[in-house]
Image (cartoon, rainbow, N blue to C red; front, side):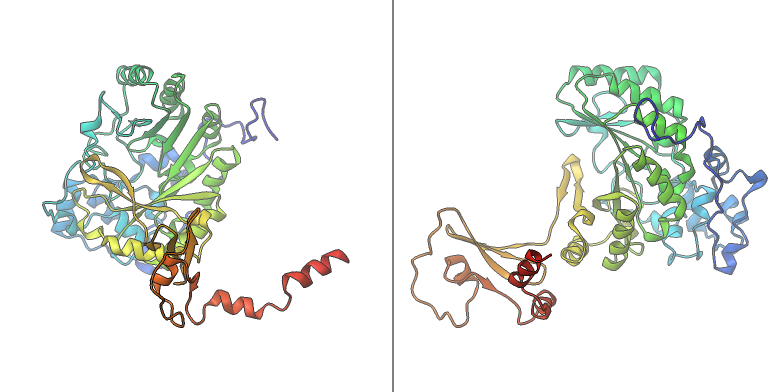
Length: 449
């Protein structure tokens, strides 16, 4: 059923919580007894979740008495803001670094390690801010920092200099300056509303921001960056979805890092957005000890596709202070991308990118699939290790001395004298040999159906 605007019927609530579902509870004995957070059955109210965030190590210890609190943890919590929604805290299964949720939200002494390559603002966003709160790096798009508040503060956050130190939202004066700049720069077609987390704002306050951006005729699309489907999925209310639908074309990008975050509640939140015609993408950050495993990411990306969330980016961890223990070598990301290609639909494979220091922007990093080239042929490698010669337009075989064609190499492919070199046996070619019915027989069967 749809309303008069064509929006799917998602109810008549006004920032009301969705029907209550049971919180995820830990199976580990040291955790499970501490996750009964529910006075007056308010668990499914996102505003209750915001009011009851864990904001200090003292509160963390009250909820998890068995957590080992050290001086290093206290120093990290003092340096980088701490906040964890009750919902996200309830996903913790083990109170140590083996737990992916614990790793992402609980302060650790390793955050104090501060090599000189790490910066407060490694992407130099402040240098690309023509008016306060608006980052204009790429010619055709801009990023609007709408709030400094998040439901949970990620320990790997690239915007630690902004997020959480003072929980504020953009003022009307600043928003006016932003819209003036956008109007004066019609080359900006795409505005990303980010933060902090825009969905921690009330629906009415967020609508003022989105309406202001939409009022600029040259802006084609609006994107909203949020982690609430992960850390506070009850925020995706009927009222919020209805409001967003009014400002199409609008996109939402969220931030799942591990399959354990894809709970029924999280999937339901993404479903509410997708059912309203709001495309949802995901930006995963590659984190050592959390998701730097090809099979873990394959499981995550498959789960996202089932939830109608498109894996969009796999980010190399930014060079921001406090994240050295999360950083992986670039070679690890390339290795993971090598594994995913051919094992997972292209729809589920994100772009692996480095958001370069000094404001260099997003640089895609891929395994090397071009082996060699000549004027006549380019030699390509597939995920199986098969080398093939792709003939260039008008290319002729190179005039070279005769070679031993019994054992062709890359030169023979590049010269055009051979078209393929492949391993002795691959799973794909084994399947081909096992097929009982060739295409001709299949076509014959079709004629008699």
